[in-house]
Amino acid sequence: MRALCVVGSPSPHSHTRALVLHIAALLERRGFTVTLADLAERELPHSRPEHYWSGEPHPVPAAREFVAAARDCDAVVLGTPVYHAGYSGLLKNALDLLPYDAFDGKAVGLAANAGGPRGSAGACEQLRQVVKALGGWPVPAQVSTVAADFAPGADERPALDASGPLHDRCAGMADQLAAFTRAMRKGTAGTEGTEGAVA
Image (cartoon, rainbow, N blue to C red; front, side, top):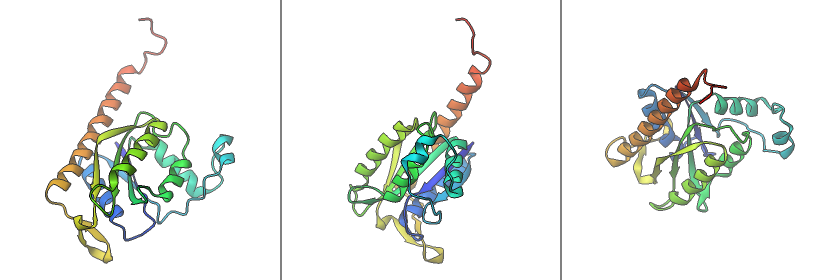
């Protein structure tokens, strides 16, 4: 199983990155091979309609690589900081580079870091709509964090406190992503060779 974990923060030392890395580690323990797409480190171009509608591969290699990673994975995690009650423009642009069916049949976990305990709900709900538009299935469990959930880690980057209810919620999301992915794989395997069969 392959998972694409997307960090939608422009900061290399973000709480969002620490949150996504924690979830990624939990997915690896559940049998996933994880690809990390840290948008702060990837120079993705601005989405332009002519590239979206042309049907041709994007002319910028970084965009092609991101689209390929989204297509090739079995599950996705989208992590975002909350800006003005919404998800980040950096993440929005990355998602706009994807074809309309990029998440078709894939489970997607949503995670957000905000300035207050209720700040993440709106951003996650907005992302749920985008995930559905891309054909994905947003899992019920979502994770919201605030600055107090983190402690100083290595290289001046924050690290998530891996104890208590927050860790349990991250683990719950990872469990749902793994369960849905295995179910989809089993269902797909069960339908192989049935095309054209008469019921």
